[in-house]
Length: 373
Image 1: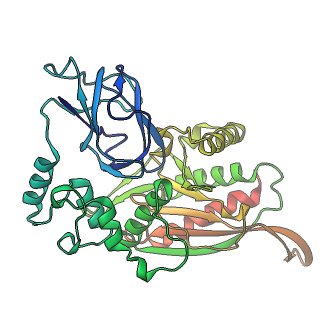
Image 2 (image 1 turned 30 degrees about the vertical axis):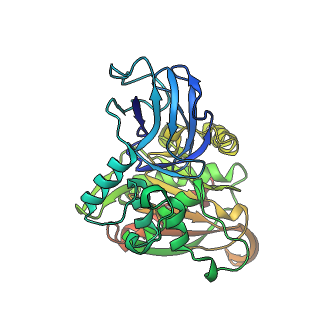
Image 3 (image 1 turned 45 degrees about the horizontal axis):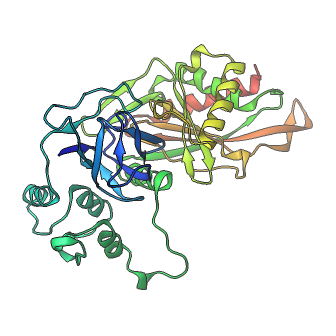
């Protein structure tokens, strides 16, 4: 028997959710055959079979959360006596596995010893309980041999008696968004400043102008194009400008990253944005396209809203929000004119950015937009 563990699906992700199984217990698979699609923080990734053989057991069902390096599939194959290949050249990179078979009781007992708790639960279940603030010692187990299951934890966290109407568990993108927003609220010290920009002169792609304005402002005030580590109290000022562009979908919020904005024209940026919209809508976007942002743009005004308090996603320290543009009567050179006004909201992490740096950044954004270059 060979136990295959869930590999790291992208830059140290702690877990992934089972989106869909392509195989079932008893099936025979070929090497590199897709076995399951796993939903990570933003993307759906197929995990291929690391070897040929018969599937003896699947660890989890659709919707279950599997911790990285936790058991995923148990095989019976001709390769049981030899180590599996470390890299199949697939989208998930190095596929880690164990040639030593661990049963559930071993994992449960080992996890309990490590945490010092008496409750019997798999590591992924313990991680979920921690996220939902559930004390496992108070949970009634329904699994085999007194094991606490994912459903047991969810039931303990959300007793049906406390809810009315349709109740659903967050999955995939929405679950990831909830986790990230909680982390932001716990770690970041946010401040928001707002101001209007007269964008009457802009006649072409407004989003491209916003991106180029962020680029110029980041060159003027690098402190906002940065990452900050609150534990080590270190910050990294980036030379490249990688802008995360928030995109709303029915499934939740996606933030693809426009990398090296300083090297791209307005036309190239528009083309890349349109491609991202298509890949996000079809859920074909690559995990690498959702990573590496150094600052974020939320153009929420394409839907509604004037000002906002955009949420910063750590380790970034700033996000610029643009509300719905409006026509407004303004005094200009002694006369009243109808001007096109864009409302801007800049959130910044006051641990790493001063008020002066933030206001100068916003002033640089406004200056570029009002010139309409």
